[in-house]
Amino acid sequence: MQALGGFWHVPIATVSYVISGIGIGKLIAYFLFGYLSDRFGRRKLVLTGTLSYMVFFIGIPFTHNIAVAYLFAIIAGVANSALDSGTYPTFVEMGGNSSASNVFIKAFMSLGEFILPLFIATLEARSLWFGWSFIGALLVLIVNLFVLRGAHFPDRNHTDEAFSEAHQSLSKVRRVIATIALALYGYTTMAIMILFTQWISMFATNDLGYSSLVSHGLLSLYSIGSISGVIVMFILLKLNFTETKLLVVTNTISLIAILTVTHASTVIMTSIACFVFGFTAAGGVMQIALNVLLKMFPTHKGVITGTYFTFGSIATFTIPILTGILSQTSIQSVMNFDVMIGLVGTVLVIVTALAIGTGNVFVHAGHSVMSMLHVGVTPVGQGQSKDN
Image 1 (cartoon, one colour):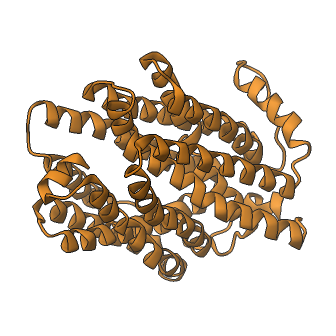
Image 2: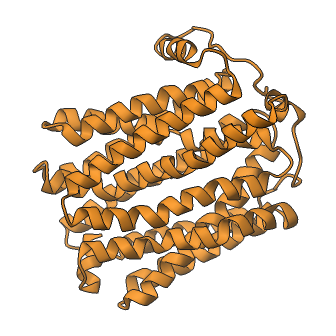
């Protein structure tokens, strides 16, 4: 953000507004691409997303005009919505334990979030051109195009009967409540991550007084936590832990972690809290919540995926604008806003768990936490799909 601000000769708040264009692109495209994914297949959507992202990564580092940069940001949002609409349904249609498989997408997202801050910090330390970070991503996409040429996609709209069995007996009222809560959670879970990743480095530098290397390192710790969380979530889902209980446990812990980040006064405390926050808030909870939704509507996976991420795209559009306004007061107020979002998200997953009726969610969630801490304990879970 700082490099782009200098490149465009604008304040940081303006850069944040440009980033909001990604949310506009998502908002425009998600529902449409969800329908097209169900209608024409997943491969075409994945290719569309890859090519659109290539346009974005080529355009941004060579664009001096703010309006054109905003257009490229919109294209990035379109690219992201195309990839989501193509990839998540594909994993479901591969069969097996789709809840665990979809979390694997998050593993590679986390890998990128780990590498990128270190790459940017290296460019800054050596006074190299910031655009190399965009060119690097472009090269990865070019390689990915060749990989996709030989990739086999499963038949679209294939439904694993065991996949949706657990949620088909829900009453209409409970299903409506759970659907609304999960849709809103799609907003909060995206918002809390966007806000954190965009502002934690600047917050650590300006408000906490940490060095640039340490501040960027906090984002990498968050990403390491995210990768670790993905691995743990993948294992727990394979062991048939109940998804809603995992959502309650992880969101509660992430709320405590982000509260610690905003009020910590030492590097050690901040570092631990960033790792725990990444582990719980970015360890695949968005994908787990999506899978709960897909189980309730198994025959319209593309549309449901698009609708769910539409709420996330609203966050991608609104959060940079809101934080840009708040940052004019203080960056501390931006981070406090993140805490509030985390609180709302925690309430939403509790409502979802109660609506779906997974038993006494608070007692069982506590048992789930204890199970995570002991190797060899058989986790509680029922009605989950099994591997083919």
